[in-house]
Length: 342
Figure 1 (tube, rainbow, N blue to C red):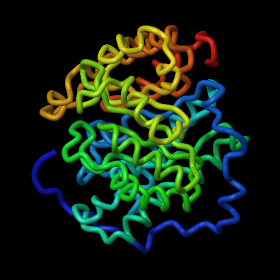
Figure 2: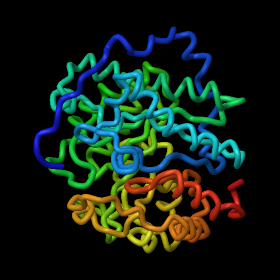
Figure 3: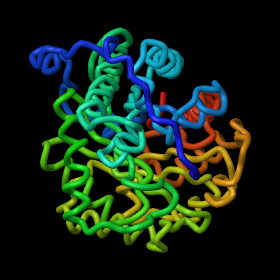
Figure 4: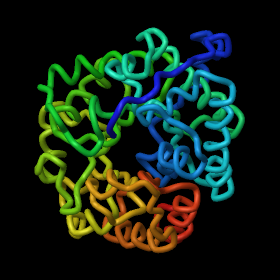
């Protein structure tokens, strides 16, 4: 991302009313995360879908800004509802990820917001998901509300790598805001380096929430830092005492990481989720594109199935950059019949 971006103009009179804490407790997920025992779906590439397919402007790629207006909230509802309908039709669970990937403290200033306003948008993002869960779920265990935490910087480039303690302190603020809003878990998406992933896990532990840690990998299946996925999982587990509920892979095409998951090993059993890109392009190529590469949804579904046949412990199926409802639907249809799926 290059060049200045416009600041966000909020209609603060339209913000969602804060829920009573007792209401949040009643709506909390009861029991363990369902994805620990069975397969569930999640959404596709929220930001790329909104920006390229729906023509919705996202300053600094920050979908959280949509929570500031009634029109923006309606757009997000329109985005989420078909996914929930898909999960309902298949009889499978669903993880609702909040639109807060780019909503940690450093992004307040570029977006022209006070920190308190950005916190308010984080809470509004969660309240929207909780309301959708109330509408769609007959049992709260069917739908998990997850607070999405993105990297401090770019999801493709690690940039300046923080120490573990600094990362935990930095992400601790958003983790606490999301926890107080009533999420069931946190998801650290597009983590580019071990230290930041470890810091988010420690921040989740501090607020008492389970966390899924998802790594961005390059075309060679390694993190942008060059670390292997195996070493990254092992390092986070070692420092945190195995705190993450599970790990995921995101922001890469299955061709980029399938070889890494070709055999079953102790560390691969910790990988329980896939959010692949639709495109086979590298991150550098994707950054330079002015049009979306949506790939082939049907082919993507078959590639997911092949990974699942080798790694049956994978339970979370969704998408990342360039994917939308078509891709997740194709994945769900392709994976039907694989043990553990509806």
